[in-house]
Length: 500
Image (cartoon, rainbow, N blue to C red; front, top):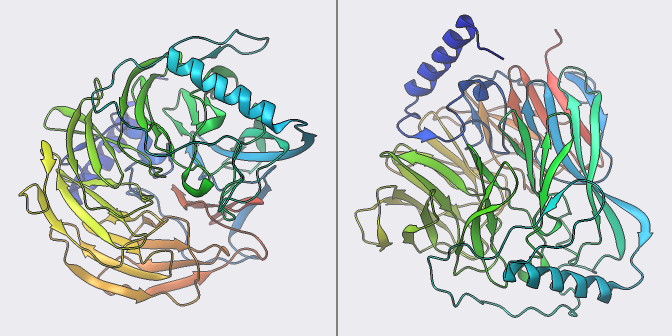
């Protein structure tokens, strides 16, 4: 639809607002159409950092006041919703009564499928939507000896719980942002998961992404799916199975730029990062990675006329978006990297917090191996970093939690110096949801659904503490669109705002 002059003016004003916060020194991929600012196109939002520069969500609510609508979710999941043009899209996995009578046969089929993927062959097509299997390795620009962990298809789950025997339906659902009514729901695949997952994980913990034309779902071992905005499956691609560390399960999401979907595939076998064509799911390039399992989502950014893909890991790496060539790498992160990196000016800020603490600000002009004493490292902060929740960048400050705890640290994004550290947020407990920001406030949601609203200024004052439900689990991150806040639990999707 052709954009009106008024809409273009509004979008330009949004651009000026962003510039005033110093966040437009680099160009975020996916924001060439500034209408994305009034949507939430991926799990970390239009700025790719959990912040909205245009939304004005409510500050106070409870179970009986401020909830505009509440819609039940079929199946379970912790997928953060995305929003485009009044559609709220989320993922869930529905356990069925059907069982697999021979799990060993399933494992054999899966391993056979993975072997065929690596050899470049294509599975015979069946009835229904066209399924494309990405071809074999198109390009590997790192070392080829990348097998970092043995894979035993017959092993029992150790840390990840008992391997499922029931078939799950993997559902993509659309809700109306205005009313909460379900627009459509489709099952893109039915499968028996090959790993049980951590007791706090589930089979729908990744999030979709959209460009407003199609919806792209990277569901890891379940496949990659492209749907139009009406829920029609256009294509699917199967990359085989991931084997996660301690069988904790999967959770990374894909990143989108133009006609390319960037897919992370770090696990206990051959890890890589790949680029798929959004038109048909074909493989554009694939680059091996000397990494074990990570759960971080790639970030795509343009700086200095070059587009880079930034991927977290024990070693953080920047790749050339065009062909997957490794541009730079920097070690120093902890095990089990989860938080998604973000970009501030011409630097990428990356942190991890399992069995240690690391936070680096690394220049995007880096090349080669970046050492700890390199000028490419602008600053470091080796304290109080998060394990699961990603940080947010807002008003030139970085906000993040200590591990999964309700203690907030705020850093100056320019210097890395703390504004305050380990500030206790009373009323909250364990937290998996990532930190969000909008309208001069920081939003922190714990696993019980209690949300603290904190002043984004230097005081870090808690403005309000709100709760919407009992006996529900909230692991999805908060979403801000216009004057509304979306919270997703394992049972319901909540829309919080002021009545029209």
